[in-house]
Length: 114
Length: 117
Image 1 (cartoon, rainbow over the protein chains, first blue to last red):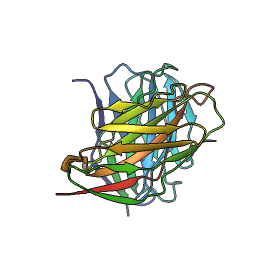
Image 2 (cartoon, rainbow over the protein chains, first blue to last red; image 1 turned 45 degrees about the horizontal axis):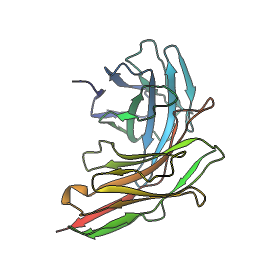
Image 3 (cartoon, rainbow over the protein chains, first blue to last red; image 1 turned 120 degrees about the horizontal axis):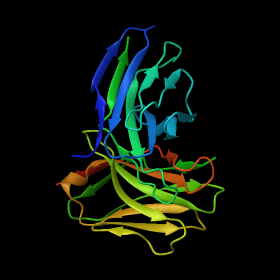
């Protein structure tokens, strides 16, 4: 079964700690994305990667970091510099071809920082 | 920069009736895509329908159809014969088709749809 997995589903951390959210896809997609969703708001782009070993900042990259060492993996680290880290985080992937744009989403990770 | 606006925070519809969700967008690009995504209580994002800006014909997917007005930068979603399973948050989104920012989705704030039996 092809798809995107995010783990864990719920994550709890103490303030001041870095935390890494996992995102894995077996769709053979080139492009991967991280979004943040806050209550009552749409999704906002944190980082995206169109190819292995390359990534770009999205609209709200401050306090986050990513890596793309493998095509199928795009982990997101929420650092202690992120002022309001509690949110729902969604990972997505797409073929990356300029004429094919559908993004497939993972089930998300709910991060709570206290 | 692209912006997407959904002016209806909440909408409701009776089962089997029709409802229309509104969306307006702003972009300086000539080639772009527009989407409607559904997010049910499970929070899994599901693509409902896609419209290529260069196509004049409105996209249709079973009970879901769009009214794409390019000059007005309007992209509404019509759900016909509403079902209880249609209850969800609906997001309108836009995406550039070229340039260095291709692939990036810009989302609206979402519309919560309630379906009454």
